[in-house]
Image (cartoon, rainbow over all chains, first blue to last red):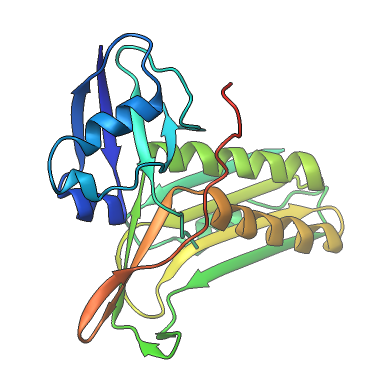
Length: 81
Length: 147
């Protein structure tokens, strides 16, 4: 299934891309998606292996099971204000 | 109760934030403005870049404002965060609350800005004369177990 992964701030700079589409097997978790993203190349490997994340705009953990078309965002430590 | 929140790349219209609050039931309106400071940790800052996960930030800001209204009895809550490139002295965030009694206005306003810093998906990069750096932030409140 296809999943869209968004990168922001420091993670965007590290990876050199604002977002990527990945293909993962049905039943994959967010942790699996992060593994696939980090396997995309040397710049993506610089991303943390256990980042905070959001699935479809809601904070989620690495064990969250994904569905086709989900939007997964890797969330660096937040610093608004 | 009314809630008005937004994320914008435009300069924050503080008059609009303020006028989104206040009603005959209220005895107090509190307005908080966060502005870009010239120095941080002894380093001089020449400008600040704010990045946001825009659609999620809109959602989270609305949630925070709604929780403030429910928890502290605020009749109106308005909150706005700016993104993009800001200069020293620019308003980066504005929060206004109105409540029947003043103590609740201070409590609610303080809670909104603290909560926003804890969980709004927004990041800032400080620019210096000789470089720039994403600021260390707070770990967002990711749930312990799957929903």
